[in-house]
Image (cartoon, rainbow, N blue to C red):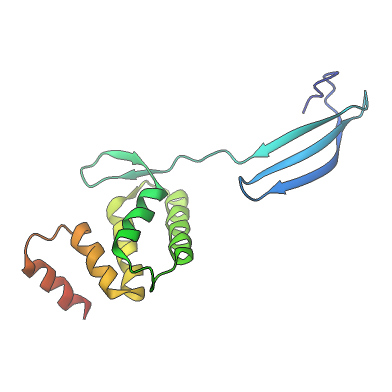
Length: 147
């Protein structure tokens, strides 16, 4: 870190504050040569997470898209906003640490497994869109597998 006033590279940290909203750290520094103070910020670099879609194309992972899909299927009285947030964080972490790009099929199966334990009706709603049911028999077969 260089002092903006004298370009000296030696400084000491006088004050440090973490900001949990944007996961940054604010440091108040004092130059050891000229004695003037200045502020620096440290932020985590955004990691690009890529998913492979069913058609084989690549797309950047969008947690908001996942959240919206889940919200369309659930009953808000049975599944809280906090539970959805926590699940989305789990999926995001799994996508980030995966050695290979995660597929939308893997994400969809994770959602189905999660919904199966929380709300079977939401599971069926999500499955009907995710698995692209074409007939009532498709819905019936899935319901028999659920029970």
